[in-house]
Length: 123
Image (tube, rainbow, N blue to C red; front, side):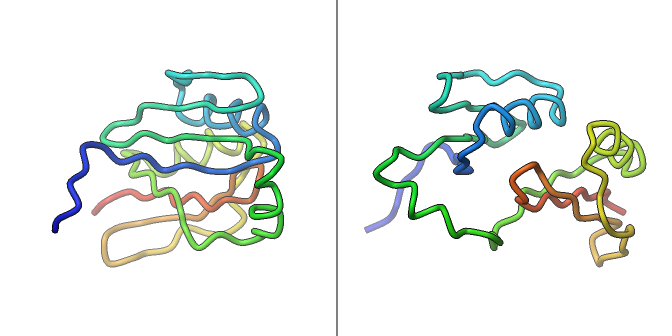
């Protein structure tokens, strides 16, 4: 049997839905295509949907101790310095330096909940 899927959605759990939705609205320069206050927001990105949800009270403990996620939201940008400046202007400057990877230049940044973003500029 083969798993047949039609779309891919990455979802981030948060207890601070409004803060995270505001952050991604500003970072992506887009409003969510779906917004249910205090419950869920969804952004339609190029080739991907990004969902942000507030877990139901019965599921909060499942996400409460997730201090460091193993998943990163990787955003390929055309101008890494401009992307860094944009995040810095929003009050979330990347804490490290630009590094050189096999696929180009990149830097780590973090959203208000501490989820890692990788800003990447291809060679």
